Image (cartoon, rainbow, N blue to C red; front, side, top):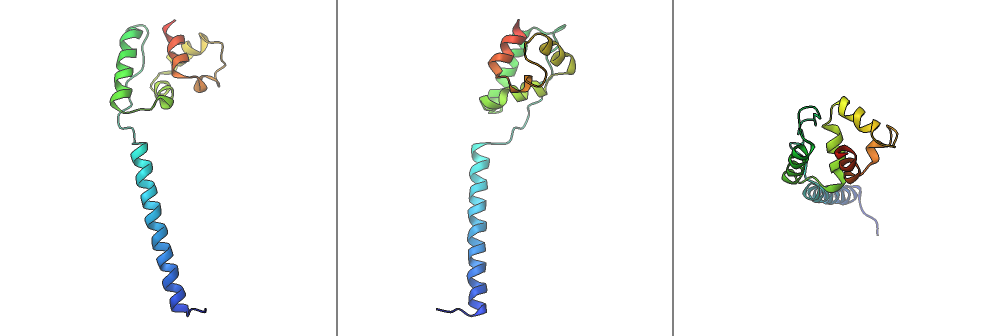
Length: 114
């Protein structure tokens, strides 16, 4: 069965409209499952003036309050640290500098607490 050019155009527009609606529905699902993180700036841990246990408690509260998933906590922690803390942290671990970013939050917490 052959369609005229106007019928083909109409079918194409309808298909494009359906695809647009499907994409919008998928994007809505993605935003629901991984909401944007609003306030992750906790401030860095300053070993000379702050206790690790106090900072850790604030970090835990902040990540829960901002619905930060466990797999993103280490990234959030590391981006909140000043270069001095990162240097101290790197010097206290056996991992080289490029591997620090791949450590789990448990590994980071253990190394910083020591």
